[in-house]
Length: 253
Image (cartoon, rainbow, N blue to C red; front, side, top):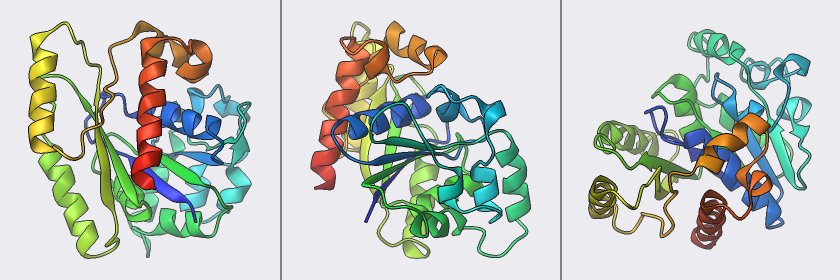
């Protein structure tokens, strides 16, 4: 059975999609058959793997509207063991449509359960507490929470954790936080150090040992349509995501 991890934070710009792409890539590289499921209407995880959205014949929008099965939209990437279920801005319309339909919270879970078998499914959720995000939380076994090392980092996290608690009480009793991942850390600034200390205080057992640094190569990789491990595998960003992925595998086991 697949280990399903939803990469979630309702704040935008915290490195959520970058984390989803690179964790999925390193899981695949370690020999795990991995699906990166793009569940964000911005579709950045799709383009971040070099997929041309104009050429798509099926997306996650078709899947949530139950017009296609998950296996019909999955594409194999150029990287071994790594597959993607793509999205386009059309998914935002799909979200509006499913709001008025039955089983609106469990459509993603049903699609994954009836889909092909993977070792890992990494869900890139939208940067909001939307119906799509809730679908991701209901489908997932774990939540990976990227948190930017900046002043307002912990603001709004309470709301997300409260939503997780409600979902645990009802639709998905096993969903759990696999870890909090500090991103965009600049180790030279005292602000980054303070925020890291604050995150460690709130989530002592959950913070990852490896934090993701501010890294130019990491920011450049998506424009080339490849993960950081392909774009510059010796960069600080690549080394950090490799270490985080190793820690994820250890925590799952």
